[in-house]
Image (cartoon, rainbow over all chains, first blue to last red):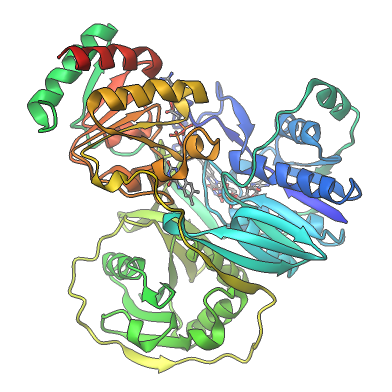
Length: 258
Length: 306
Ligand SMILES: Cc1cc2nc3c(=O)[nH]c(=O)nc-3n(C[C@H](O)[C@H](O)[C@H](O)COP(=O)(O)OP(=O)(O)OC[C@H]3O[C@@H](n4cnc5c(N)ncnc54)[C@H](O)[C@@H]3O)c2cc1C
Ligand SMILES: Cc1cc2nc3c(=O)[nH]c(=O)nc-3n(C[C@H](O)[C@H](O)[C@H](O)COP(=O)(O)OP(=O)(O)OC[C@H]3O[C@@H](n4cnc5c(N)ncnc54)[C@H](O)[C@@H]3O)c2cc1C
C-alpha cells in the first residue's frame, strides 16, 4: 500500500499580524511557523494505518512551500512518515487553493496512492478546499471532516462530523482521499530516537514549475485587520486590582451577581 | 446577476442555512434560483425556481451524485454564482462542483464590502477581499453571517431534476446522534469556559473552581474536549452546544468563529486572555488581559469573600 499525507506550514495564530507595505499580504518577519494543526491528525492517522498493516505501507509526506517547510516535514518524518517531498515554492502562500490542489494532483498522478490524507482545512486561511479538489482531479473517492477512520479490505469506514455533535458514517473504497478534522486521534509527540532517525530519511526537492500548469482561479484584492466594533472595556495591570474592577463591572452591568 | 443557491436538508428537514443563502443573495442583488436534493414538502418558502432532485433516489450523502445534480442545474440556469452554505454539506460538495466546472471557489464569505467578497483569515485577526478570476464562481457562505429577515411564505416554482449517473461509490451507512449530555449548559445562567490556554488537564480544575465560585457551570472550547480533559457535553460551539447565559467567561479561549457561534448571544461576555489582540476581544464586553491561571484563583477568592 502507498500512502500520501499533505501538510501545510502555517504561522502561529497567536502571532501579531501586520499588513505589509503593499496592503495585499502580511509581514512574514518575526512570525513563528508550525505544522497546520489539522495536518497533525492526518499524519497520525497515516502512521496508525501503516502500523495496522504491519508497517508494510510506505508513507510519503508532501508540503509545498519555501525552505522553512522542511521543519514541518521533519516533524512528520519523526512521527513515522517514510519519506518527504518538498515542492519548492517561495511564493506558495500566494497560490490559491486551486493551484495548490493541482500541484498535489500533478505530483500524485502517476504514483498510485491508495489512501491520501489531508487536513480538513488550514488554520491560516481555512478554505477547506484543497483535499476535496485533489480527489476530484485524481478521480479518487473522498470523504471530508473525519472524526473516525477505520480501514479493512480496501474500504475506509469514515465517520464524518456534522453540525451539533451529529455524525455520519460512510464507506469509502480505495483509492480514497480523506480530510482530517480536529480530534480524529491523538497525534504523537516525536521521540528523541525517532527525531534522530528522521534525519536519515529521504527529503526530495521538486521545483514547483515542473508540477504547476494552472493559473490562479481567485485573487486577493486587499488585506486588512477587521474593523474594530469597539465597545468592550479592557482591563489590565495588578491582578487584585483587575479582579476588583471586573467584579464591580459585573455587579453594575449584569443581574447575576447578588 | 444570477445566483444558484444549493440548499441542504438532513433527515427530512430543511436546514436554516438555506435561508441564509437567500439573505446573502439579496445582499448581492442577485436573481435567485435554488437546487435541493430532498422532498417537495421541505422546499424553502421563497419565490424563484427550485430544481428538486428526489433524495430517495439520490441519497442523503452521495456527493458524486449531488455534484452532477448541481451541475445539471447550472447548465439550465447559467448562474454567475453557485452558492453553498459553509457547512459539512457545503464544504464537502462545493469543491467537487468547482473542479467539475473548472471555476474558482471562494470559501466562507463573511461579508460584502464595496461589492467585493470578504473572507476572514488567521483566526479572525485579518480580513481580505477576494475576487474570482472567471465569469462564474463557486462560493460558500459562513454560517450565521447573513440573517434572513424576510417572510418564509413564498412558493418556489418546482422543476424536477434527474441525472443519468446512477450509483455512488460511497456508501452512506447512517447517522449517529449527538452524545447524551452530562451537563445541560443551555439552562445555565453563568458559564465559565476553559480553553487551550489553560495549558494542561490539571489546570482545568482552576477554571472549574472559578465556575463554582460564580455559581455557574463549566464550559470548554473544543481542544480541551478533544484532548479528553473534559467530556463533550461541556463543549460550546458549532459542534457542541449553543448557549446564551446571562454571563459567559471565556478563559484562555482565542475566539475562533466556531466557538463564537456557540456563545456570542450571551448577555454579557468576559474574556480572560494574555493576548490583547485575540479575536475574542471583539465579542467581549470586558477583555481582561492576564494569565488566567494567576487571575482565576484571585477572582474565585474575592467572589467567595463577597
Ligand atoms: C494572508 C494571505 C493572503 C493570501 N493571498 C492569496 C492571493 O492573493 N491569491 C491566492 O490565490 N492565494 C492567496 N493566499 C493563499 C490561499 O488562501 C491558501 O493559503 C492556499 O491556497 C491553500 O489554501 P488553504 O490554506 O485555504 O487550504 P485548505 O483547503 O484549507 O487546506 C486543506 C489541506 O490542504 C493541504 N494543503 C494546503 N496547503 C498546502 C501546502 N502548501 N502544501 C501541502 N499541503 C497543503 C493540507 O493538508 C491542508 O490541511 C493567501 C493566504 C494568506 C494567508
Ligand atoms: C468544523 C469545525 C467545527 C468546530 N467546532 C468547534 C466547537 O464547537 N467549539 C470550539 O470551541 N471550537 C470548534 N472548532 C475549533 C476552532 O476552530 C478552534 O480551533 C478552537 O475553538 C480553539 O480553541 P481555543 O480558543 O481554546 O484554543 P486556541 O485557539 O489555541 O487559543 C488559546 C488562547 O489562550 C490564550 N492563552 C494561552 N495561555 C494563556 C494563559 N496562561 N492565560 C490566558 N490566556 C492564555 C492564547 O492567547 C489564545 O488566545 C471547530 C473547528 C472546525 C473546523
